[in-house]
Image 1 (tube, rainbow, N blue to C red):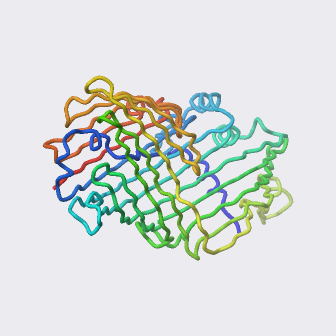
Image 2: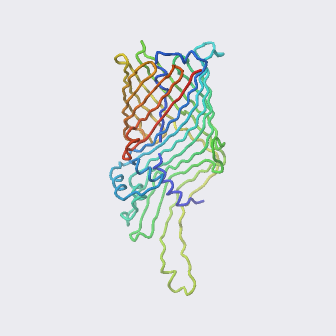
Image 3: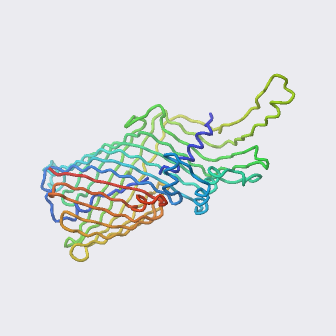
Length: 417
């Protein structure tokens, strides 16, 4: 079985289309003295969020790779010269609709209610070294006569939908949700080593990879297409501080897995491949009227196995601490970790000012994740005490400057009735 060189190139190009997600409940719901929404029958909350980030690639480069445009040699050289030993990029986009039932339920304790959720998620991540980037975008001329290692590098894309049912505390909105997961698609390329030798004359390239490529059923496409099925657990624990001085929040997202169906494929990349350039002389000399084309090997040989496999969802753990100072101000700190993603742990700190029980503005500085750092801002508004609107970004610079390394935005809209 073989995989086309075009696929390998597509894999390398993908590292430019990269994102992540803001994961916790709007803090105004937990801090406001107006609890009118808790006295209603239900709360419906819709959220949408996405982030694009890299610690080495900037917005200008990513836009041109995805949307088209000329990338000059100087820009590529500048990006390459600023790269570290291992570089990362990642994305996650998500949308979710949640229904909180505040009416009395069958539970003995009336403070507990039922919750239902419907969500869709798209995630991708890549890690790569500078040598791989240079070889793809600057060529291999400088490596003539040498053997270089393009690894380690990895790429993973995954999309899935969740249909959840859970319980929550009506006072704190703490809760647990168990979801049926419908896997939409999955790809994972992990290469531990990829030695590439270029001949002195540049007419022969030898590639010796060591890695694995896994992908889900390619005959199915679209939302909730049945390529895989699994389960996921989401947790929220919100602890109010004494005297309404603030809160501590812990959230766990996508603790679960998907079993991809029997039409899924697994490839072992463990064979040496040789590409030889064309010599036109044999076509033109001593062949009379007949031209014979030399054999050209242009594919990567792999060992293929078809069958079901289990893969974890991209787990996220988030901690937030907010404490009041003065009458209407809060300082905030937190961190997020993603144990099975290419992102490094992210930490942030910020300040919020509450203009009233219904309106709050915040500013934050974050470090880590897929990008380097970001300066963010957020607005939360509860008109009439029955609506909740939140909008913000963790990377203001990315919305303005193409030289930034991250771009994101998130919005929540909810209504109690």
